[in-house]
Image 1 (cartoon, rainbow, N blue to C red):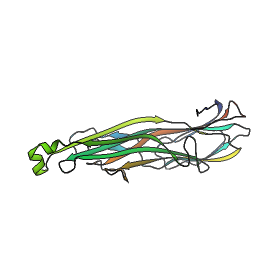
Image 2 (image 1 turned 60 degrees about the vertical axis):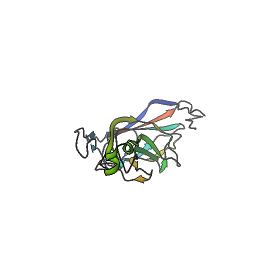
Image 3 (image 1 turned 135 degrees about the vertical axis):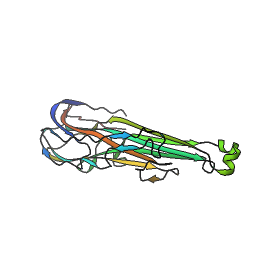
Image 4 (image 1 turned 45 degrees about the horizontal axis):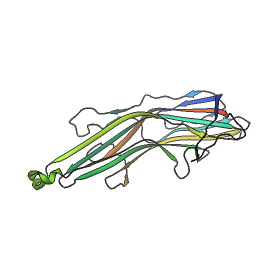
Length: 237
């Protein structure tokens, strides 16, 4: 089934720009408010260090918007919620004669809820939308062919990959009733180790670890009306 989003953009606009702020709470029926910080993710691009390629700055996983928004009367009232975020990913996989394969992954997920429920396209079964994710694996049996490596286990290959990118995604909350609605937006970091087990993301950025960071970013919330108020906004698989 295709998904059709019919939105009439001229409407009441509430823009909330939030970066690395613990939370913001406000009541609004269409005013503009902003809270901006300059905290940014960066990559340690100095080679030859134990943490070369590591991520610096940014903000930890936390709630970046916690606000009550007043919606107008009438059918077809819809909130268009757009979190925009710079994300950083780090993967370090090292193999040796004793460990011929290494893998890990890192991801940044964004969660948007309205009155405690996930906002489409998120669902209760999958409440978080992946903004950025990378799986990295390094494998080789070359050490078996090198006598010195096989005997002394003193050879290794290390692969480090770090990236920064900006992402934006629209969450749609259709057919809202008039009154106050509780909007929350947060991000989370998810990492796995060589066994595929979920582990805490690294902040040391050393051998065989994965990490993530986020920031800066912004949140915009637009109150609008659907073109066809009888059918509203259709969300399907």
